Image (cartoon, rainbow, N blue to C red):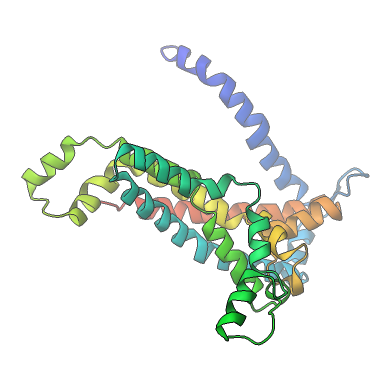
Length: 290
């Protein structure tokens, strides 16, 4: 330990900040989840009652879990795959075109007016682009209330989330592809690698495992923590809670009702789901290139 004291000194500021603003809040949230806490009175210990209420009495939470799992199952793998495929294709372009295309694909994730655009597209009157296009082609006779119909609203939110998914993970994949040592491909050709698919599996993917892991963590967090898209597109709450997610349920009890113990229980369940999925993805990524 004395031998590496300089490393510990350099790591100390980060570990202090990480402990204060990440580890400590998680631990406190876990403890508060076993209490009744309304922000006015001192927390009162209630044991497992928040969790029993969550799974046995809160029907809206079960809807939120179903919607969140559907979000994660659809947007997680699809956006992760799309990020890598687009990064792989763009990486083959010339530097100037690659820089331009990277900006084009990344721009939606940082645009402030993106939700306004989709609200216009799926407006419930005949001036909405989706309704106007379908009515012009004769597929529908009257406007569809896209964002007020529970048959459509969840899938619209999923679609918008997929469109926004080319963000940090996409940039990480671009960086990973750029950092691969080109001599590995020459060595692979000598060792019997015959086509691009073999290059991808035996050279490209194993060489960018850190970026693949980082992208997986980002996509897991994004797919499970859907809230902003849902509230902006479908409203809060959405019609019949059709686009309600675990995070919007957490916001409901944490920022509106101020039932912080119950909100902490919701956050703990979400945290366990994220960690479990992350461990599963790590196990799968270790097999890449084998």
